[in-house]
Length: 392
Image (tube, rainbow, N blue to C red; front, side):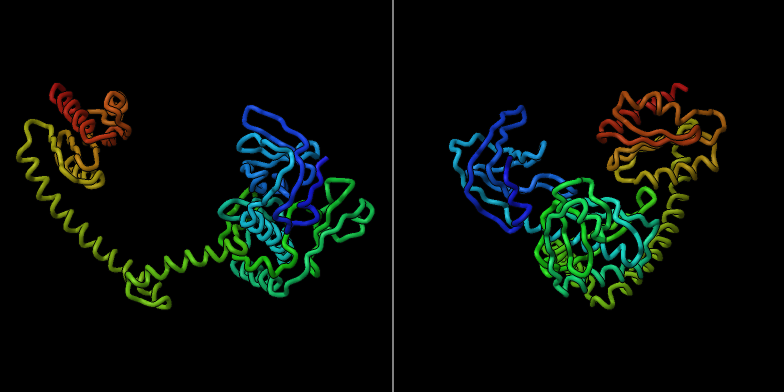
């Protein structure tokens, strides 16, 4: 059985050992080692990566207590030098220890037990048994977890029996009955856990809460620790600085500037809508004057779907007949009628014929709209519909 170095020495980066087993599977080559510091998937924590004898480690799993390392290619020697991807390992140590601390403080301040933990590549989450956590509660949690980081409490690892575990104030009882591994954050909590952790809370660096969302009757907290949190702050600050430069304002005045821009945008939109309404009225008269029979058909170079629908609604509200529009730039087609003779079921017609032109859409009896993969398809469907209306 492999000696699991990661249990007792999370800071081991390199070591020499012997390959003790090999299995060739359909998805790759797997080996076992006499000693390994490669942490396998488990407990919400991803596996370590690195190299074994200069060969890239692609995955690490544990089966029946044996650790299997998936390699990029077959090893040529049995005596090998192993190296951990330390940046990845230390990141996982920061995130996992940060989760322990965050869960402990959340339980202490809100009585919300952590139900699950996920250590992702971009961010981490814990799901806690609280229907909702308010802004003040989240602020208090974040302040306290970071105070504990500044305190730099020691993190101790020990192995205990079932009887000894029963005497400890564990958050929850372990599922194993022997060789129980205890992670203690001095002055904070005792927890049964097999993951890798830093030796003191100070090495977590910082914990930053990102957001929350409701999930399965509880609350999911998104957060980042250590280097991830620093990178998040740097990225956010870069975006903020770019916005301030573009808007020629300071951080303190940024919200006020945005609110002013939103107000100006609303005023401009109101003015634009008024102009469009007036323009549509004139354009509607032109289309009515130029129509032949009861069908108004027009192709627009760059009119939006919304504007075509608005113009079609105006035309069918005041006059009998059918309206057919197409937009080349948007590859969209609109068909409308007001229910007066000659009646035409717009939605059902689209539904029955769009497939032949790679179109998607639909609508009601009085108006239908569709989008196409290309302007050519849109124009082809427009001509087909125009021809059908002519026959009708």
